[in-house]
Amino acid sequence: MNWGDSSKGMCDDIEKMERDIIDRIQVCNGCRMCVAMCPTFEGWYTQSAYGRLLAVNLHFKYGLGSVEELSRFLFECATCRRCQERCRVLSRNVGPADIILKARRLLVKKSQAKDTKGS
Amino acid sequence: MKNTVKNIVPVGHIYIRGNVLKKGNIIGVEEEKAAWAKDLDLPRQGEYTFFAGCGYQFMKYAEGMTRAARTMQKVGIGMDKSISMNIHMSKVLGKVGIDLGTVTAKVSTAGKKDAYTTILTSAVSVLRKLGVDIGYLHQDEPCCGSPLYYAGFLDDYIENAQKNYELLKSLNIQKVIGLIPACTSSLRNLYPQYVEGFDLEVYQFSEVVAQELNKKKIKPKLREKLIVTYHDPCQLSRYLNVTKEPREILNNIDGLELREPGLEQRGQWSTCCGGGGLEAGSPELCERLGRRRAEELLATGANVIVSHCPACIMQLKNSVKRLKADVAVMDLVEILDKVLE
Image (tube, rainbow over all chains, first blue to last red; front, side, top):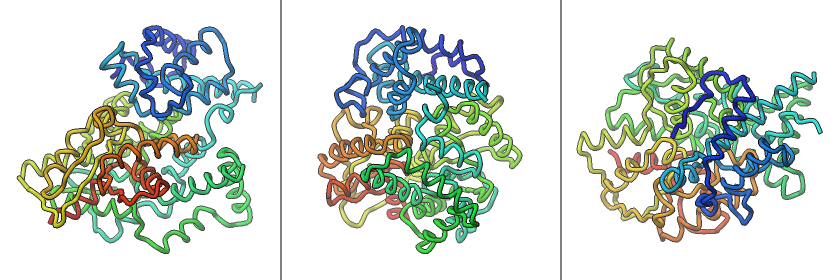
């Protein structure tokens, strides 16, 4: 499902990406339907779509947690989209897998911007 | 602390990115590209263009590499280090004048027919048996670049996509048959989003086959009775929404019994086996996922696990081997090639 993908073409605007992601996460009402559904879930919330979105929200909105930790949570996602299907059919169609991909993109984008600035 | 790309993206993904951008495939071996099609006399032009993709062609290298990474991890060297060591080694050897790519290529071309490239030849023979007119681009076939997309390198992905579209357009291609679900979903779902004026028609192999079987009313027969279960690859079932066609094909075969896992574990809800992108970042987690999925599939009591994706096939083969179960893992293509005359 495509929820108004604003990243058409090259996405240069980091702030806009960040705002898009945060706005979209607010749609989630935390039904946790995607938690036990996630194939990587082994007991921690951050091993599921819900926990990953929570971590993204806390990091980008409130600046909590380190980037390394967040990226570890995000890159442990198998991007199998099982959560997305569940959310679309039974909950609020947040599109968790798409948000996780977007957050990965944002992290890469931010670090690349830093890389070029530093050198 | 400084946040560079290396701190954020697992090294496996960075390594794959370098290969895709520099060598045009995921593993980084140039010599082997299109070697499987040498004896098939595939024309370059046809009604449909067959898109073989990297997966089946280079799976044997991926298999060796992940195995090496896993053993190194068990000895105590992390995935990150083992791959960077690999890169480092190839750099050092390059300075001395030895190219690691050609060395591995020479070692593995000794047995030219491996379990994965035969799937490609079977796919071509199935399409020929059904009378589908196909062409193949041989060495010119680009890499769709989907690993870049899933690792977060969107700019590189878009650049690659635009280049590929221009190439495909300049070769006068209209219809594409993709075999690997990830490549097909990349071409069908993502390219139109990022390439302006993208107008190629992209089909998945099983869609074309199901359509042809229906049209020609072919009812293939198996000599011995076979109990199979079908594992839906994520990219096929949830990205491309192809869940009906593979089942149609399997149910259409006489003498084949399809036993499915529970309602929550099949079709659009199928559990992920953990193969593919996850393997580049966290191989241990991926191993556990594979075991869970294999257990679900083995509970159906089938003799053969059928799937339709190179990453899933590799992952399930390894998991079944680890569980020491006496079950074969086959691709849908192999079964089709056996039953069609």
